[in-house]
Length: 111
Length: 112
Image (cartoon, rainbow over all chains, first blue to last red; front, side, top):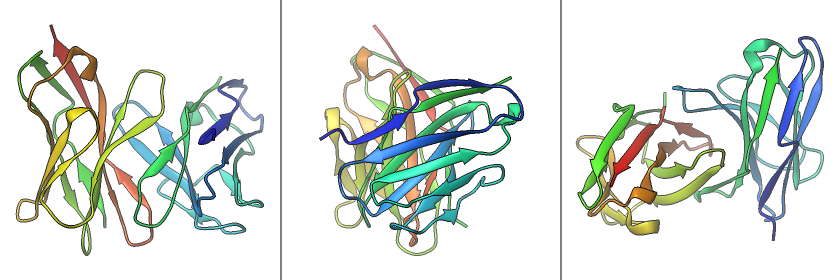
């Protein structure tokens, strides 16, 4: 039981490049979330999903897209990376009324 | 709108002394409240939650939190701090759509 895993752990992009972050969970959770963490700002919700095939916007969705084609996977895409997207990205999963389980994070730098 | 405030960026405490990390919240309806801890270069780890019931909630690693509805607070406490408790602590509230809102975090420094 691996819990929540994220791929990759680190990435450096140039402005304008695209990439996809993969989150996988093996706990059969319905809900999955993508957050970004920036110093002094806590975690801010980017997008989330309440089940396979569904996605919804969080607090800071601009510049990001997501897909949940399979229940266990939640993908976060950056179509045209900007320096403002330099951050640490965390994926989480959970069930109604219960705690979230967090992945180890992806550190993204956009130059 | 749902929100969480952690008024202290940093809390310093000596090892063996009691610690308190403050959290206040604003939420529509009944609050579902959580505390998480983050160690350097790691993801967040669950400490405890309040859904309903007793106002004093016990969690992992000897931590507890006191829910106070009239003051809309959910302060994290521990009777005797350890150096290993030094980390970043986040308070969070969950809304009726299962979205979580996090505070900005409080860095706890426990000195020997």
